[in-house]
Image 1 (cartoon, rainbow, N blue to C red):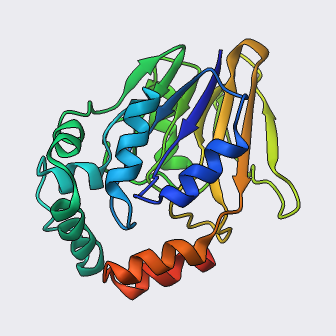
Image 2 (cartoon, rainbow, N blue to C red):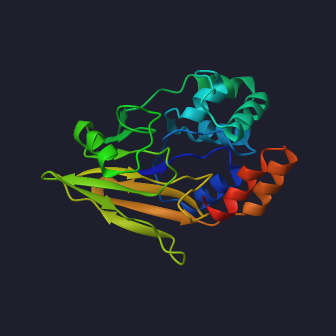
Length: 247
């Protein structure tokens, strides 16, 4: 079973299409770690495509805010503006689908899905100390998380925690990771729609537990086309600009 692992699509259909093209014929089923919408110009298109693919999806904080599951009072003004615009644009059936997304942790096909931290779906996991609890508490050897928009992760064995710097070079499509049971892994596929790790290419992962591999992928897409649609929608310019620099 080859699993396409998506996260933080953030309503960027051009990036999503590039990911699906790059991953074509390489996966059997797909999962999404949340933040389907928010920031980007294509909330209906991205939501519709995930539903069409039958992607098993958990909720992210932007999905909750845009669908009204949580208030967006803690969002910064730029993110809040995108939340309000997205809510006004989404079709009622897509809003209902987002409203009913389950929260993580969710176990499926031998992996665990979370949006943020294992214990708190809205917490960012950047440091080994933040990762440790999830590595110890998860019910599977491989857990995927999102939220940070940073590709990479952590592993743990015999009380030793390791930071995994896994990132394809600019001339590479993917970087492989060989899983070594009983080592435990907390892995981030990166963001499809708004990378923040200084690489503007769309990010995703393909997990093959049968062959004990996870591939971390990056793919170029037409950023200028997305920026044009964002400006047409009058989304904040700061969101438009950050796509080009990947931060």
